[in-house]
Amino acid sequence: MIVAEAVTQAGGIDSVLLDIEGTTIPVAFVHQVLFPYAREALPGLLATRGDEPAVREAVAEIAALVPGVAPLAQLNAWMDRDEKIGPLKALQGLAWAEGYRTGALRAALYPDVLPALRRWHAGGLRLAVYSSGSEAAQRLIYGHTTEGDVRGLFDGFHDLRIGGKREAESYRAILAEAGWVAGRTLFLSDIVAELDAAAAAGLRTCQLARPEDGTRAGDTHPVAATLDEVARLFALPDTP
Ligand SMILES: CSCCC(=O)C(=O)COP(=O)(O)O
Ligand SMILES: [Mg+2]
Image 1 (cartoon, rainbow, N blue to C red):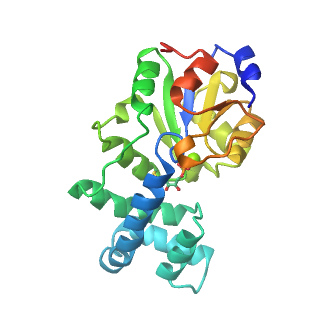
Image 2 (image 1 turned 90 degrees about the vertical axis):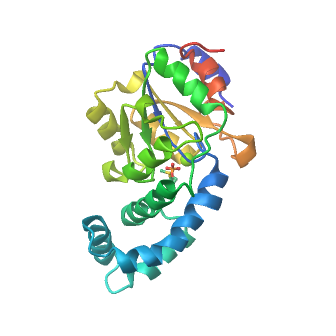
């Protein structure tokens, strides 16, 4: 755990980019609630909503990526391997929209997340999301938390259309789009490969290793178990 390095880098951060799964939302919620819900809903969605532009576009993308394979078979194969692929993420987002609409789905963030994000936002930090989940899915999650609609905390929502989370170029593109400065932006994620890519683009980084998720702490980035710990390590606003 590189605590000393974080302490020497404290201060000077004005923007925070946040991963979702394993960072603001429990891995269990994504894997035991969201993913099974989408897996069950996708056959019906493909069968009944194939004329909708978003569905047509995703199906065409699947055909371009894996010609000759039935879309549902390919989606199931990707879900089996938890692949982060644009058309799968787009269709999962459409499936979840129905779940949030009916009330079957509601996003339970880790308990430390909303208090910390509210303090950071009130303290003047700019916040944005970068997740493999589609932008629509990100807005659904933060629009339907157990504490209501908190989308207003965020300035931006970035997904795989800007590039993969393990590629430095994606972080450069996000900074360019947001007008943020790399050295004053902190990226939070549970995945070391994502943090490595962000660090290669010049961002500051901190790994969230949540005990309840069994996340293994790496040894190349500062590590925190909660957003309160992140705030202490990086001297973010209104640290409790
Ligand atoms: C937008 S919520 C669903 C998250 C998701 O589909 C996923 O694959 C997790 O990706 P993340 O980049 O947030 O770890
Ligand atoms: Mg994650």
